[in-house]
Amino acid sequence: MADDKVPSYFAMFNEIGIIAQLARAAFEARMPDGMVLPHFSVLNHLIRVEDGQTPLVLARAFQVPKTSMTHTLAGLEKRGMVETRPNPEDARSKRVWITRKGRAFRDDAIKDIVEDFAPIEAQFSGERASAILPELEDLRKVLDAARD
Amino acid sequence: MADDKVPSYFAMFNEIGIIAQLARAAFEARMPDGMVLPHFSVLNHLIRVEDGQTPLVLARAFQVPKTSMTHTLAGLEKRGMVETRPNPEDARSKRVWITRKGRAFRDDAIKDIVEDFAPIEAQFSGERASAILPELEDLRKVLDAARD
DNA sequence: CTATATTTGTACGATATCGAACTAAAGGAG
DNA sequence: CTCCTTTAGTTCGATATCGTACAAATATAG
Image: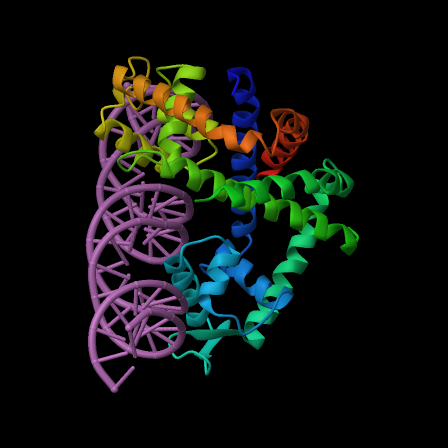
């Protein structure tokens, strides 16, 4: 690859890394207790996609090692936001369900986020977000496919 | 804000988060020892911007708490990649210099990255990276300014 | 100058992340 | 069925991240 193309990639990943960091920090600053982004993300996933998935399926959905998912789920279960039951089809695994409390927490969090987006929208419109979204999705898929 | 604008932001930050995670994991998988992205980033910053900065200045440049920077610098110093000397202008602080070893490590790492970008370029061109870069920079600045 | 407030960096504790090794269950070959 | 391999999840250890509390130095108010 020509060296002069590297800086664009470099700069792009750098900006993406900083944005992710800032967004996460801003989000977590509004979460109570010791709730952290992955906690919320899993709750959201269980509602948006489906309840009753196994930890391994969740780990793959979030591209994290299964051991990290074990930890995240333990935190959610400790807080009573999910509950797990044995998988009748496979005694090695469990299935994860979101609880009423978890659902309520997620709904409240989303309400808060919507409010907090207001000042951002003034400077970076939803249209601009929509505009770059397809490129980001493509990039994510390419990186995902490039994993060994 | 209208609720129907939220999903775009949500999806955008979600994609950005995943991309950052995948890129970081791919990068760190190619780093030896226990070297981690922030280690490299600091070395790169010391070369690209300037040597001899104080830890606090570095922490602000990377938007991390100063206590995290202390930790990152300790790791670099333990590996002999930076060295610190007292700041003659302010006895409370130090100044951080990159060593020959740190410089060599950073140069090698960049060479490796350039090679590893090749398969990505086939599916996501440098032009596309350049195209979305200004929007990402804008977004980063907006988020940065929105911090309390 | 002296007292107070601020700034710089560190120590410590809590939690997150993740690789390696492990256990238990399931699948597959014979 | 028995043995071997694979799969799901956990445990453990190493390290990262970051908030709180602190010590030392500096800046500021009076």
